[in-house]
Image 1 (tube, protein in one colour):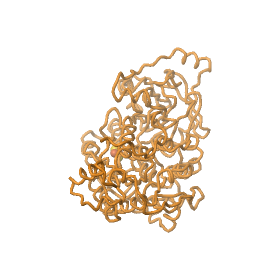
Image 2 (tube, rainbow, N blue to C red; image 1 turned 45 degrees about the vertical axis):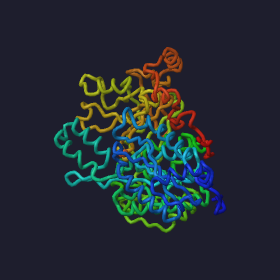
Image 3 (tube, helix red, strand yellow; image 1 turned 120 degrees about the vertical axis):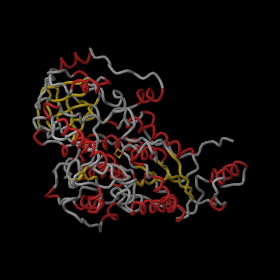
Image 4 (cartoon, rainbow, N blue to C red; image 1 turned 135 degrees about the vertical axis):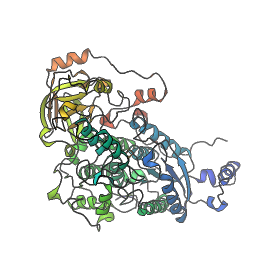
Length: 580
Ligand code: FES
């Protein structure tokens, strides 16, 4: 840890708005006072923004106003002035074409809202998949003291006596209906059991993964990730976070002090240990880009390769976040990784203490949920990064969610030109496909969909499912829900819509996947590949205007985090000119 605390007291950034007797200072204070704020709250104390992604359109975050109130208590108690503000809330379940198209919009909103407003530090209230990375991206680009508090996962779902995990069982039930193993009526009855309480997905999906990433990076207080949304300790966590941000401002402890290369490498290892979502790859690459850390796909493979998956949660294992919390949550995992020499113990966290100081005394209360290494779900739990002529800039696969027998496979390609082509063909019994084939889906990357939708785990054809087969090799430039599973190659880069080799795969080509050797190969000659690429032209439309046009023009590839090119980097917290 190299962090040195700033002197306190000192004049803060918010004093540019509130700390004087000029006409403009009076103007700024006067308007704030219409909310009933006493004069002595403008005495130079830290002004703390509470950045809230609350929205009824984002059901996973619909309880965040209650948590914001708990944060507010903590800020007042510690001598700060809390001011809550809303930002665009990209909700995973409802947004079309995909919430990922709006992660960067949210990040831009967050960045500009923090910089333009009179605040000295910010609490980032997030929950649903994209909200956590978007808030960290935006805050990192401003680099004022910032701390994450998550909304927390939903309680366990139960259906007819069995545990039901968000997302994961949606895919399972849907395939069971197609296979004739479950009735549509039963599926409809299961619907309500999947979302039993306020909160985010209760599996180790992307929301739980990103909450874990925030904690592993050091951007949230220890223990934040797993506390259920409706547990009273979630409110305590929010309260403590409110207290802590005031001291972070006094100490001038900023994201750039915490988000070091070491922190990212620690987080990648934690992702392997928890069996975390492949979506963490694009999000961490994007956050790293905001603070100038040259994190690459190869770092993901290198750091995660020898990390065993020890968290026995769906979709890789069998339990849910509620059980993870009762077993001790992420601090137990971090302690284990530190003791195994897989994490840097000295990395700094928002508490001002090191990672190790936060976890050195925690206990594992359930070794069936957080497994001993000798009982790990898989010895190599990290994300595998594949390369080859089909993915010159990389592709990813999550071995812990894949079928071991399919990790080395050669099969005939069955190609879907886009998601509509897939939907048209997949249920047709005449489709020439069997379980040995490789399903290839094009034009679902950042530019192609647009937004890089979570369709990479495309469902299998019913005629294969009816044989009792539940997995096939699938390849696309899409993402996959963190709650999903299967031998699924994702994020293939360059994407098809940008003219990557994926664009020219044809029905009947043979594809070779070799995960142990990190290899993805289209079995045609170099000359044939070059000829096909030379005659390729885009098939996806280019949006003429609006946000879709901005997105299409500026989004980068998945291999660098799919951020906008003009948003990469930190632009600081300099106070702009006054408007009066
Ligand atoms: Fe919002 Fe899963 S859909 S957390």
